[in-house]
Image 1 (cartoon, rainbow, N blue to C red):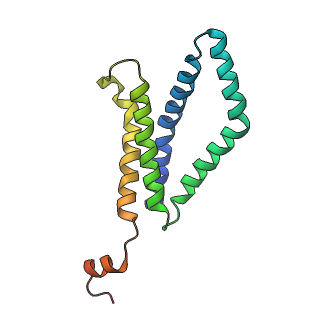
Image 2: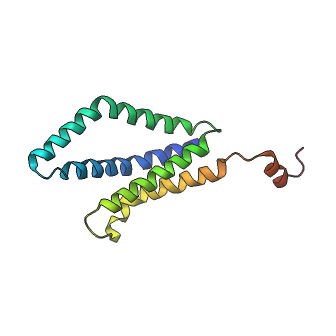
Image 3: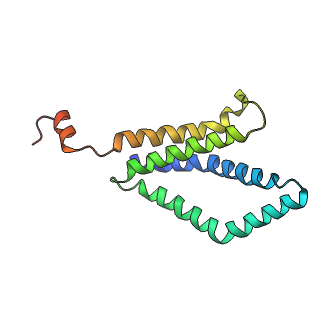
Length: 141
């Protein structure tokens, strides 16, 4: 059940991460100042992202996804998902040009769900030493 929760949290994370990366890319391109500079920056980013950015993004996505199937790494994967969700929401809030309103709440709900599942997995799956296990369960040797 916990690997399924991890998959749900990663899938809920995708829209907010894509939106935040689009905000960052467009903010970088808009900072060029002119229309020609804008298109030049977009072209430069596309030439970098097509061969390497897509490969690295897929590698990170699949590593994060498959780490949730390992009982040893699930707590770390949940912590990474929560960090990505909080970071992407922070980027969108910081780079947004309008004040925050209640109409924006539906966009942040998947990131909130993803962060809460990730933090829950991180807390519940964190490996505990033998000292803590013997305190919690005194019958075990």
